[in-house]
Length: 137
Image (tube, rainbow, N blue to C red; front, side, top):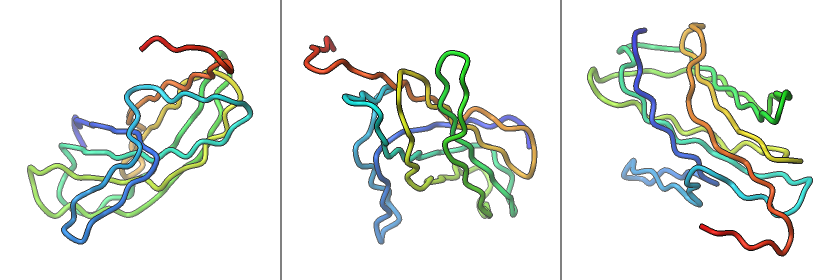
């Protein structure tokens, strides 16, 4: 498929207006703070991808939570995609996945097209914050 440029935004929910504009709710910078564990956090991923060829494609997205030497599959999504306009960005909204968190880690998403090797689709730092701690931003 060639080189793709993938832009990603992590948020709590994604909605689509009747005018085809996207509403991203609860956007994360590069980190999600978890105040109690174990916890289940809802994460949606908004992707804007440049370089997908016109035509029909099968996509597969996987989300992993990595912590130390552990790597746990937290969810996966498969779908059909049709790109109609050459040279334009393609936007993909992932449904909200519930991610179980017990300790600090990295939430990593990967996307593959038409059974090609997966590509990095974004990383979100997961930080467990001690109760009553003060964060310096």
